[in-house]
Image 1: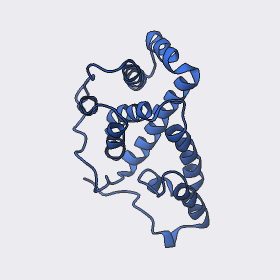
Image 2: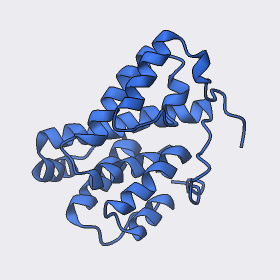
Image 3: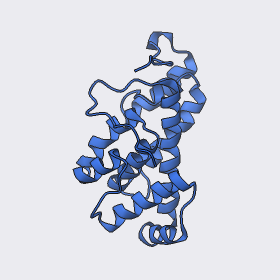
Length: 189
């Protein structure tokens, strides 16, 4: 792997604005300055806005944590984002996403036998990433299951984790040492 372009800044070297924004992340539900926020610390105000959006989308959105984690995995796969995959695949499994579903997404395959709510999240997220749009049929299924707020939150989850994927892919953020098996290369579509 190529070297991390924006590695951790030692806390003793943080500016006052970096310290203020980092402390918000650390005092929040994350409890630490985790991987996505390491490169973002170079732009403290941006990091602060991003982390507040992410805190809502991850911990308080209209979707269950299981469905949010599933959307995050689809996004991580689309961006081949190893850090997000390493963080969220174990959480998704703990929240009830089947290991076979996680494996299929990792391999770029359509998972089989999904419950309806998971099938809609996978279809919606996949269409959004691949087609840059969502079909009317998939949109209607999502609204029927999650309501308009749930659909907007699902759009937000996909967009937020795309942002983090872009930041970490560009910065070459290192994958945590605790990471399980990395994502395989994305199959040709």
